[in-house]
Length: 74
Image 1 (cartoon, rainbow, N blue to C red):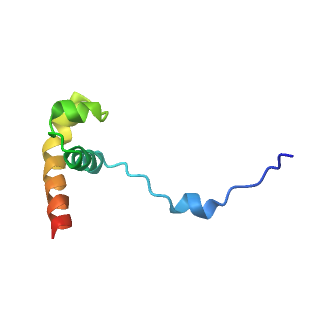
Image 2 (cartoon, rainbow, N blue to C red):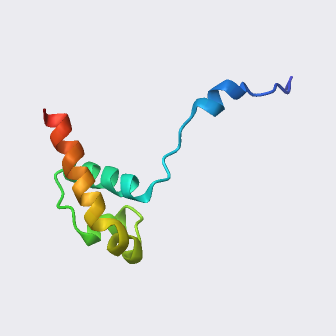
């Protein structure tokens, strides 16, 4: 028998979905690099970023990825 139950809203309210494109791209760069691949435009496009997004956020995302990588290494 199927019963309908309301979802526990406290769990869904606590979930944080990242929407900052620079942070998303920086995270993708770290994943690409962690997999032993070269982080370049082709690799980023395979992760779903458009050429316009790469042009707009690429340098800032690179700097953030480098900072995050150094912070993890420390």
